[in-house]
Image 1 (cartoon, rainbow, N blue to C red):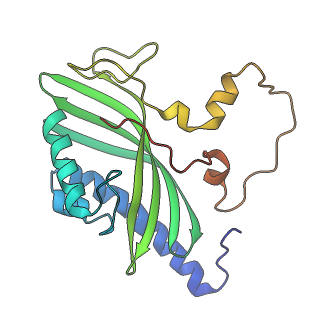
Image 2: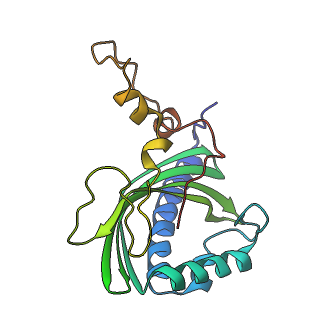
Length: 209
C-alpha cells in the first residue's frame, strides 16, 4: 500500500524530508571528496551493514579508508537527477545520477554512474540505510570506453559496471521478444515510479572496487 500523506502537517513533513534527503546526498559527496570519514560515516546509522560479517560505523570507516587509499589520490563527485519516493514517513528510496572524476596514480579516470539508495529516518534524522553503486563506465579521460567491460582502471582488468543488470527494462529492451507497438500502461502513481522500474531482488549486489 502506498503511503499518502493527507494532513497539512504530514504533507509539510514530506516536503522537509525531500529537502533533507537531497542534502544528505550533497553531504555525502562533500565528505567523501574532502576525506572527512567521520562526517561521511555519520550519514549512515550506527548499525549499518558493511559486509556479510561486518556492521557499524567503525567498520564502514575502515572500509572507506582502505578503498580511498588503495585506488584514488583525489576525487570529485557531482550529482544530478535525483528521484525520491517514500514507503512511509520513516523510509524512502532514491535514484541519483553521479558524474565523478578520480585522480589515480598517473591517470585521470572519469566515471558515470548512479546510486540506488535506501533512506531511513533515525531519531528524526534522515540517513542512508544502503547505497548500491551502479556503474556505466570508468575510463581514462582520453580513452572513451567503447564495447564491453567499460570499467577501465589503470592496472586492473576491465570489467562490467553492473548498471544494466540491475534494471530489468534494459534486458527486456534488447531481448528478442521485445515489442514496442503495444499499449502503454497507466503512468506510475506518486511514490511508485522507482518501485515499478527497479528489480524485485533487494539482495542484488554489484562489484564496487
